[in-house]
Image (tube, rainbow, N blue to C red; front, top):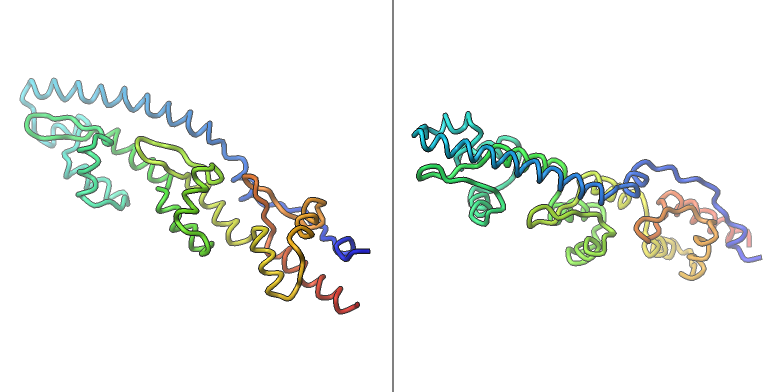
Length: 245
């Protein structure tokens, strides 16, 4: 009898982080974002209309406009920095010039609606940029390069959503993906670990064991992952079996 039939690891994988990742509803995230943008657009229109009235009445002090929901560029930047947003003043000004951050001109100065600032903070708390997500993920998967990471985003194996002109990745998704990178092996990595420990199993034979559920694993976005402790148990059993031969 082939030893693959003798070595069976009976274990149920119960992992909340994996379940959370598999259950992310990105269509729901996109629908929710569209609703937010509709509400934001209405709120910004109201603030800008109020600003026009203030302009007509010559009530143009920064303090008066801020009470009405409009921040000068400098005050808006300081507010964002105070909330923990890591952005340079030059980059912030660039977003305003490209109109990815809505603004209104009152008199000779440009102002930012507070609703836009609140939304920037909310988005920053809920999402990572692709570059930031990559930097976090690479701490646990040093073999992946930025181009390969972007490829996974484009293929939707890493969930993402486009907000404005930027593609962003949910923070909870990255938390789960980082957990998988720490606690699981991909099939290729599992085979490398087996071979490093002098356990020779051909890829086809290994994948047959996965197909027949003789090795516990999870499937995420079409890829199979094996818990690291399961791989260690397999190594121990394979070496013990070899010792009895």
